[in-house]
Length: 540
Image 1 (tube, rainbow, N blue to C red):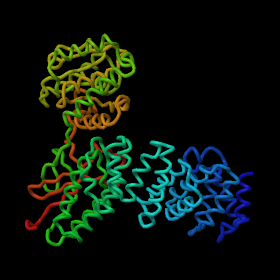
Image 2 (image 1 turned 90 degrees about the vertical axis):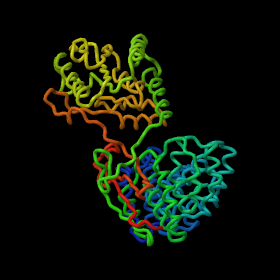
Image 3 (image 1 turned 30 degrees about the vertical axis):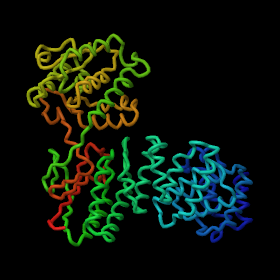
Image 4 (image 1 turned 180 degrees about the vertical axis):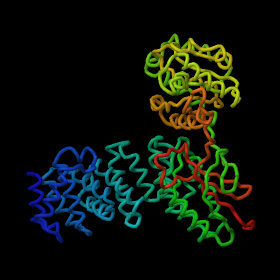
């Protein structure tokens, strides 16, 4: 009945002009209702919601320009069939945003201002659409609409305190009100909200030529810039070069390099590479060479052979991570989830009696490389790996943590080369491996093929980010542990991790790591592409 009612209202009001209503709309609607729409759960609940989504989509596809009167008629008939104002409005916003009809989206927000935009959920959806318009289709962004949305939020937050915190900050960014936004940043916004907001704030600062507000921010929590931020920065730098000269443009570039260098993830892609090539080609007085290469195994640029800046973890961040690891991974809700209080106490006493270790080996993980076998073969696999650690890689103080059922067969040679600690078969031994490694200090490595995801997800940010960075810097992987396996397959020492971007002041050189278009699912640990920028002249 709902589908037929929608079909009748479309015909009666002649909304879908320029195509055959009777045949095409019915066919599309029935086809749509039998397939997934890609909408969220609110709009996927039943056939009514699916029909609503398709009705809106069909309407906007065939109407490039919609007046307030058109919106009024269309919305009124939808409400007669559905009778839920916020559901209709959110569905319209969702369809417009998903299909990038931002000009119509701004038009619909303006129409709702006249009818009374007083539903909190609808206001949030309107802000989201306007933010996407600001980021993806700035040509159709309307600052006046943003200002009106801000006025609605200021009125509504009196009745709904703390409900619009993120939306208020976003709209302030889009309006260019950076002073108010930064005031919220320091006193109101929590860390997750800051991480969501930072890219929009960065892009707005570039567009409003107010990057000083970004450079002055004190980022106390980890953050990541979106790929669009680099594209926007390249445009801003080129504008500064044309308006204020090469000197000032380079100063802004250096500030951007510092800010991006402190971010968590590499988001510089091949589009950004091309944009920055164009920027450096715009210089007239200073000449630059821009080349693309790889990071060598020893952490140098293949284009200029210069060593790249390596990532580090500060003592403060490392200690914070260490405390959270013990608290949430070993102890958690109950120490019995991983071990027993008596065994954990015995383990801590063992660590206290010994000097900090240089490397901790996950004995179980290494022993089972190659598949299940006898206990003496397990021990031979561990002994082979420890011998490599001790005599080829020169690790002095080695700890092997394993299970009782095979560690009791450890040979005298293994006991001579390494300290051993056995846990019961019921204990989660990799939790002990992690704790032993971090308690030994920042220098200590860990040998395991386990990604430890079941443990790291118990952490919260920023400690989770610190742990992931530490794991990338200190985890040694092993493909094989058989006696005849070559060393490069037995132990894979982590390569130096380079900063997202590096500025060498002594010879005016920049290096940007970048993500290639075809990554094939490769994670940041294997990111090796680098853009090398070198100054060719010495006179400014």
